[in-house]
Amino acid sequence: MPTSIAGFSGLAAAAALLIGGFSAPAQAQVGSTYKLVAFTGEASPDGGTYYTFGNPTIGADGSVGFVDNDSRGDRSISKVFAGQPGSLRLVVSSGDKVPGINLGSFSDFQSVSVSKDGRVAINAGVNNDGYFTGIWAETSDGLVLAGYEGSFDPSISALGPVAFRSGAISAKGQSTPPENQSTDALFVGAAGSPLSTALTSGQIIGGQRLQTIYDTSDESNSVGPFVDANESGAVAFKAVASPSASPAPKKVIYAGSPTAPSPVATQGDAAPGLDGVEYADPSTQPSIAPNGLVAFSSTLNSETGPDSAVFSGAPGAISAVAVQGTTVPTTTNVTFGRLSNAVVNSTGDVIFRATIQYPNETSRTGIWLQRKTGPAVLIAVSGISLPTPTGLREVTSVDFAGPGTFNDLHEFVFKASFGDDDQEEGIYVADTRPGAPIVHIALPARPRDRVTTKSNILVAGSATDDTGIEKVEYTVTREVSASKRNAHKRGKRFVTTRPKIAKGSESWNFQIPLSMGLNLISITATDKLGNVSPPYQVRVLRYERGAK
Image 1 (cartoon, helix red, strand yellow):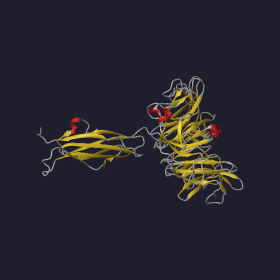
Image 2: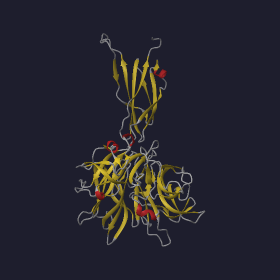
Image 3: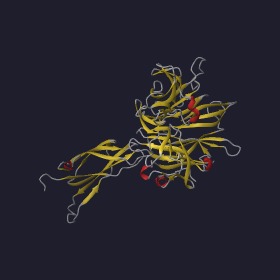
Image 4: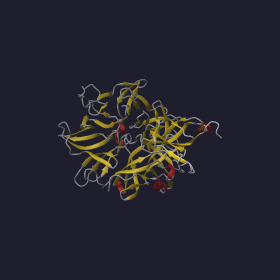
């Protein structure tokens, strides 16, 4: 069986699903279609078979990366695969020699981050007369070392910057610090180049002294990168800091420049939009989109209100996206339970993990999408049916890695488990696009402007789509007078021009000459994924002045 299966609509499967009295959303409410990337027991690109997966991540161009761990029999093999669904490649395997320097061989791989062009950054373990961990980033020269022992959880953006936190100041181009120097740091830089120390514990940021660059108390409960980085090198991370007005340390989410980030959410501050509720413990894994929007979950302090919520927005303009205790859309008496692991893209769409709680105290875990408008929609939940190499099968659990799983193409990557004890697993890409692009006309605006004696006309408007507009094209079908030779023939003849590209994309315009009679202008927009809008047609009638 191939490792990639054509996009499958989960609409019919979800619409037919009944979960303990919870009717899965009808077709209009399901948030995605699905593509299977890899599945337990299926052939892998290196000639082996997949076994069990770490949580996958996805790049800005749709390239997927993940770890496959094979512990069958007496062997223990760890591999990293990456690439577009249907054309994956083996990046590195345990037992491979560490390139460039005499450090021994790779032992295992903990996490993978994917860049725009499918390159990866890997948190790897190495055997070399002992065991140590480090960060390796993929460049045109292959894998290069970025961070030594104590470095964890890389994030590599679409343009190549690498960011990661480290329990020891030790990165490529860095020396071991003196005894009195901080041993907790955030590193950023370009893959393959010496990295700079952006922040260290002990620094003062926005009136707060950093104690740690990450919150170690949450480490065992998290998956995926603890630092998220976007294309501009901006980062989002959680730290423990001591405000100048109070010696008591607080947990803080920061976002922005890695050397001067701004606090986004601070433990004990009022949670926006929720009266009388404070942030209790913001998530260890905030997400930052290419345009700087952030998303995160947080537990809450409230005597009578919710215990958790998901928040998103630009720093300084954060709002609640989903709140524990609210009713799950399309259901009755089913509410959102604990909310966690939120990710955001540049349109402000937020994906988050949530339990759904039933009146009989049973619950299931699911993944939901909240767009800028409308109710939250279902991406995946335990009990839903998803495509597998042997047909539709019921999912027993779903999970995702947090940052690095949702891109501006509206593609979201997650892992689903099947069967007793979750013994089989699949990696899926969910296409969450809300629909085809839409064309809007500004000129000619009024019906009377579309009846004219002029020899040409300006047509202008806009086009919208959550993935962005690649191009706007137009054709013109004109009424053509019969030639003298064919003057005896009755009827009208029409000729359509070849498609031409308008000036601009989101805002566009073009000017065309008009023939006498009917001119039918047909306009289409194509989004960044190649989806084409239905034609928008404008009828313009040109007549001779004085003609009846």
